[in-house]
Image (cartoon, helix red, strand yellow):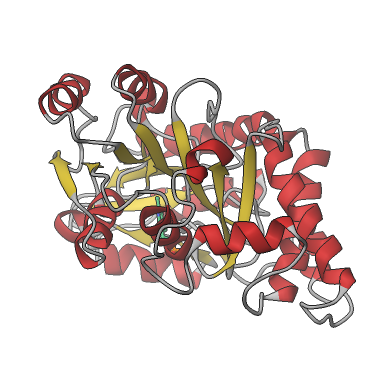
Amino acid sequence: MNEHTHILLNPGPVNLSRRVREALLRPDLCHRETEFTGLQAGIRAGLLGIYDLPADDWASVLLTGSGTAAVEAMMTSCIPAHGKVLVMENGVYGERMTRMATLHGINHLALNHGWADAIDLARLEEELRYHEEITHVAVVHHETTTGRLNNLQAIAEVCSRYQAGLLVDAVSSFGAEAIDFSGCNLAACAGTANKCLHGVPGASFVIVNRTAMQDMQGTTPRTLYLDLTGYLEQQDQGGTPFTQSVQTFYALDEAIRELEDAGGWPARRETYRARMRMVSEGLHEAGITSLLPEADSSCVLHAFHLPDGVSYRELHDHLKTHGFVIYAGQGQFSRQIFRIACMGDIDDADLRRLISVITEMRPA
Ligand SMILES: Cc1ncc(COP(=O)(O)O)c(C=O)c1O
């Protein structure tokens, strides 16, 4: 039995383990002191360690800000002025990357798909063949809008054939899904502390390929705060350009150790898969259907059709009175679906209770 007032089944922030929560109480620290240098170095190494990345080839850049900060830092810091990015859109977060490119005047094209659709590899290849000027492809790994796990491996292989650097929004997958960093032109990957890593909101990061970042050296940054080249230079020397959220970093540090102790990302994926299987089977038995086929879904979150005659608001409020927080569909899906994520310090008993509360609910 856990100690949470609400069981958070939204896609982050997550319920914290006691161990991570207690890390918030470590001693106050100045971000210009050696203790902070040690903390930062430990987290940077720990993040690389999750996917066994060699520090000669890869670096983690730590930011204070939510996942969007990391994605925007990646988009603005990894595409040179003469470059052009092709953005894969099949949900809110892909479309958000296009918006970032537009706002920052980055030369781009968008490959739009329906929100429930898989990325069309043939169309991707066609665009890359036709537009030789494309230098980068940006894609969301787990499109949280629907729970779809985009086929990163296949997308990466197409990008490799056309020497396009891959920029990945892994905000809702880093730490729980497979990410193949080797030999696939992956230039950078953005992640956050408070989803699959089970840390506290406010810290995010970009894992950058050091060789790919060399193309950006000496170029004028597009933003002051989110310039990854500046962060990388200073963090490699133990510093930081701006004040970091020290307590959030403490929590991330502990969360990474907790993940290691639990068996790393493969073990976390298994845990999430077992949780999602339990929820899906329970809801399917009650006639509540999934938006996507199981094989297309992430281990982190699934989207379900709202039960007949029940609005999202009714379902949400009913569950909240029983101690559960679920998540609405966005945009075109807001009246059709609800979403359940299974990250964080929750246990199977919570999920069994969730299923009974949902299945026993009757339309008002
Ligand atoms: C895939 C993806 N990218 C980016 C974000 C934005 O993260 P944040 O809300 O932490 O800024 C989210 C949030 O859920 C997400 O799921």
